[in-house]
Image (cartoon, rainbow, N blue to C red; front, side, top):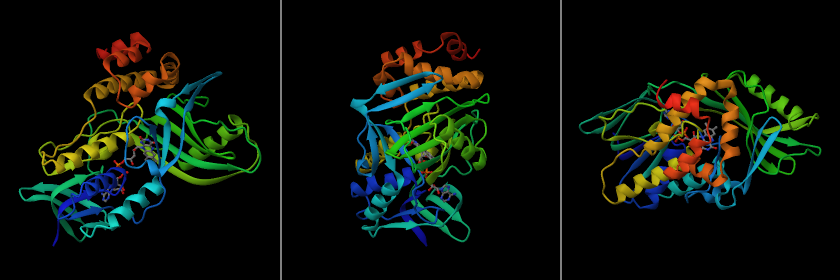
Length: 376
Ligand SMILES: Cc1cc2nc3c(=O)[nH]c(=O)nc-3n(C[C@H](O)[C@H](O)[C@H](O)COP(=O)(O)OP(=O)(O)OC[C@H]3O[C@@H](n4cnc5c(N)ncnc54)[C@H](O)[C@@H]3O)c2cc1C
């Protein structure tokens, strides 16, 4: 019988982070845990970036950190100083290796890969997982899978293709991350390029769209990156593509079954993504530490949520985005132009107070935001 005290569905960011934090608190000293995932192996598949406003356990997995970042729109460029909350990027390859090596030392933890899960439900005895040929049971389950999830919200996505580009000859590359460069076709949605400097001759370039489609074709993303390199970075020669990632982050939240007491959603599945930005990594880190601490203190297991205030403000922001669409780039740009970096970063990282939120709201075009506030 595949029976465990705990099962974690998904060996991704939230599943592995939770297992790591629980293991660090010795919660598997005499309890068993299975981590089940459909993936066959662990490869570098993401670069997670965030402003350093919260201490988490994976700072040794950093690719780099920066004390400035840019935002560009037309001829305008703003350089924002973030010395006291650096912009940092985590290498998922280092992150997976660190956690897997740590968990492998504990015989009570079993990592089960190549195991797609078809169905998850709860009975009086606990949580049940059905796979093609096997059933797994546990007293408590943490679930990061998005399968069979529904939503009542507008389904718009931040979808992107990013790749590391290496140049053989001199290229005039930015020294700091470009959070958003809106100098590209908007096609009546939101489109920007995001770049991270990797080395003197290397840059990570992400072609990002916010639209009602979950993704575009790979050919489209790649040809737009090529156009960006030739026109925005003015590099007309041949270049090499190394690591690449494809992503699609829901800019909406899911409905979770509130009757389940033994199945706790985690990660994106627990709605820890900021709808306005897609930032999730630090929210996951805060949430898994909270869950692990609650278990170690014998408290009731409940899903950790984003502060309701941010959901409320992000919902208004998404309504404005759906109306403004192709001109939303100007609103995003104004957010950075009209506010202090500290206030913006605190707002985007869920650490702002009401006064700071108020200043951000005042910098936005008032009429449309007030209309959307009152659902007009
Ligand atoms: C390419 C990419 C880049 C991102 N960059 C950033 C960033 O820079 N900053 C930031 O804050 N956020 C970022 N995000 C958003 C967010 O941080 C990540 O999506 C993060 O990985 C979410 O963690 P998670 O555990 O919820 O999901 P995941 O990390 O996707 O883990 C879910 C796991 O569940 C497994 N799974 C799913 N369904 C099943 C099933 N039916 N059976 C078995 N296994 C299953 C999957 O294989 C996966 O391993 C990014 C997202 C993507 C996709």
